[in-house]
Image 1: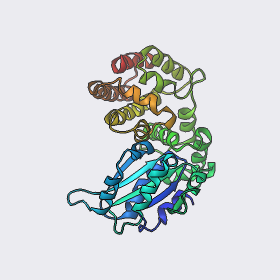
Image 2: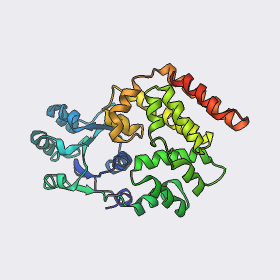
Image 3: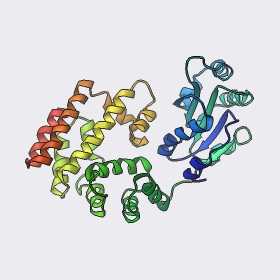
Image 4: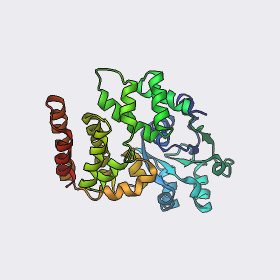
Length: 317
């Protein structure tokens, strides 16, 4: 089924354990609100990797299922990479399926249907269809209210990864603001990488606290015709991701930290390592620098390259 169908016609809440087949991490994150509605009542969701879930004692899981909380929400687990669960843990989870009015619910998230087939006799399976370019364009239209032609152009430029699309749309909406709709020229300006550097080069340089490399990338982007406010929006987006990541490091797995910060899963380990390089004083100071830069570029005409050189040094130097 399509994710929109899952959202509109969710499964019945009676089972305690579900299998959710979905290859896109962004949709897995989005599904949490749907599961919350399915289960009804007050539920505290815990997203964890299979390895972390394995470490929870079976006795504790059963106690959670049999004993409704008097002072807090009931527990729901969103277990990613569930195809890696051991046979013993699967058998323990299957026992929870027999508990009536359980105060614990478990959603086993898998990326491929083949993995779910083995457990289909034990738990109900809900499979989300892989996204095609037309589906992605519809997702952009529904979520961001873009003109269909502009939405298709975004999908063609960025691809079908929803985390990356969300990041690009955040940059576009920051740049265009609320005064006008996003146009084709905005997409061309914002989603076209520098000819010299990759689309992640600026993010990588800032996260590595490499002032010289960050200045080089910014200079290249400006030389390619990217407007200063667009460059600034990219840095502001990354700084917000850094803020979210820093608040979760040490409390969640690297993949979950990346998911919460809307960073691609393949960059999770590097992103977490980078978050540890910044302290809270630097992050707070960076937001002040960004606000001043936004005001400067909107009210005066500073030399962009020189201004960014100084700004980057203040933020990560």
